[in-house]
Image (cartoon, rainbow, N blue to C red; front, top):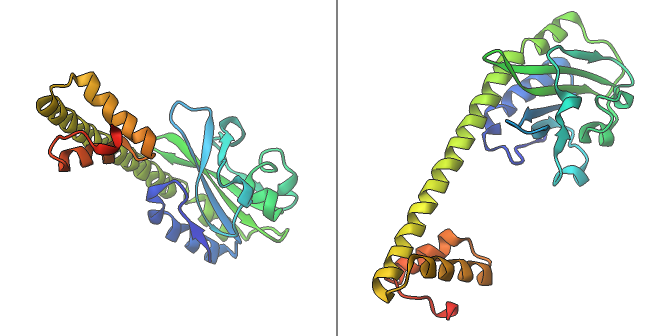
Length: 217
């Protein structure tokens, strides 16, 4: 069973549940899309099973109105030709005839969609269908919780980067008599010339004791 996390750092919490669902229902692919806050698109967050079209890995945003729904969609045949699925990367590559597509909810809000796909055109037994439908809340809670955690971690990293930059600017100002703008422009110029993030240049300045770095002269 192949799985991936793509850009979604918290997918490790979801993949085991997807793999269990595929094993329990003899499915061939499970694909999780999450809705981005205040954005008109959905992002493919993770999957288990057959991979989607490789050409789409760098362009994983899907118009949200195609996936945004509050009720499940169950198709046992020709799912790959249905307008709601035909342009999704997993269907373009694998041409799944069957899909159980369920909205993922957390706190009364739809936060994503899970597509459980089958490579054979056949109906699911009621027990297996009920099992997949029951995953709406647990997958939604995991998806939303990990997305929030990811955003918090990103904000924390940005704050840490800002503190490093401020310290480096302060050292350049104190040691060289530069203005704050001069110090900032020095670090930014080095970052652009070397294609190294500004936070790393700032750390070099700090390690150099607040001296102007030679390759910035």
